[in-house]
Image (tube, rainbow, N blue to C red; front, side, top):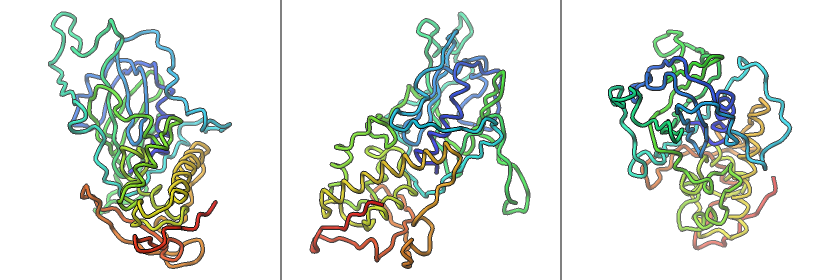
Length: 340
């Protein structure tokens, strides 16, 4: 499923539509009533970890919020494609089955129906025009999930039945000029973004101290890295790549690694994620070192296995036994730190 860098790119595609009125709505979503979005204004857009949040309301004369801009430490002079037809999004295919943050007890989903309207002005009850604010739609993308701006996704190959059918969007928001199409995603109403910026690996507020404390625990580091409470936006691709860059075996216990090793791993998490995002904004592909490879850059045979984390999800992991030796409590806990 799409990871943090992909969500930031989706965010950039949504940003030009903030402040515009939704004219018509389409899509095959059964979880929400799309008709409720018609003639509402897209007021804000935020991204946290692996979730995209859109805020709708009846406010007028909206200006573009600052929330859609990249963090200052990630802003560079990037020439983005001018034509939306050239926005071909890459969907990450990591097998990250992490539970949707805030999808259960941590968030109160709003079950809104078309009949739930204010009897006086015939508008949805949750829209408070005096406060110019409404609830948020949360988008959590599945494997090959994506956002398209003013273009629809087209089939690139035949399906199992041999049919060349274009993917069906879950939701389409039509504006006066252009539209947004959302594919392969879970959509639900919420009261607002629930992920703290301090846990987002692409936020300038990312809390390194909190992340290091999590990595120090007596758990395999490959599981800790996918814990969205501390590494929001980090998925299976980033996990595999940063463990190889840090020369750490995925099943090594964090408590068996030195502070230097853990600092190096955290440095790679931040730098790799920011670098991947920058390439996406420049329209350049991300070349993997270990993910889905048969040999590592040094020419060694790569191992692949599916490890089951404590939450019950299995994720494929690639690693090099030579470059990433496993550290156990009985062995010296020093791993050679590289600066790649």
